[in-house]
Image 1 (cartoon, one colour):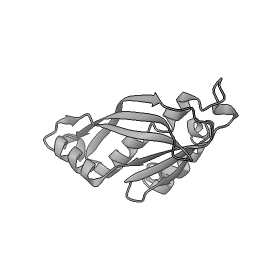
Image 2 (cartoon, one colour):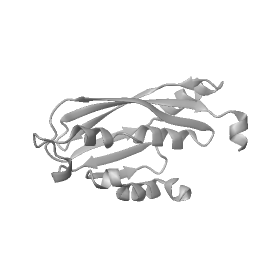
Image 3 (cartoon, one colour):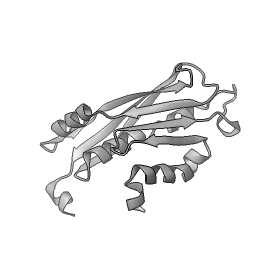
Image 4 (cartoon, one colour):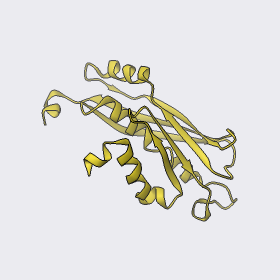
Amino acid sequence: MAKILSTPRGLRRAMAWWPPYRCAGITVLHISEDWSSARVRLRLGRLNRNYFGTHFGGSLYSMSDPFWALLTLQRLGRDYIVWDKAGEIEYVTPGRGDVFAEFVLTDARVDELRAATAEGDKALPWFTSEVTAADGTVVARVRKQLYVRRKSADRQRR
């Protein structure tokens, strides 16, 4: 199972059947082969509509939740610990149709994290993404904070 989830295609397939995403109408559209980007869609449907007929805020957050940690972990490699630490969402405009979120982890950001953790220190970086409607209108802004640390030599040997 771990082998399947270690490839972008395998993770995309697994997330298609993952109950929190399947039931909420969330689809992982793309994860790049080098783990530098991901794109996700949330369809508006009966099961994720709020009282006002727009996207439920929890679904908007959920579609953005794991991707910064997954991309960062895969880009840094097995010598690093990466956890979600904090998150916040700002609702900008009601989402009334399909909405999308894109995550791009640049080489410069990866280099910055490696430099910050080179001596064994932890890094607590923030990442920002936007949830947008098909026409580009911003529906929500999501911020995620990660905990990143290089594993100690003892842990790397295990």
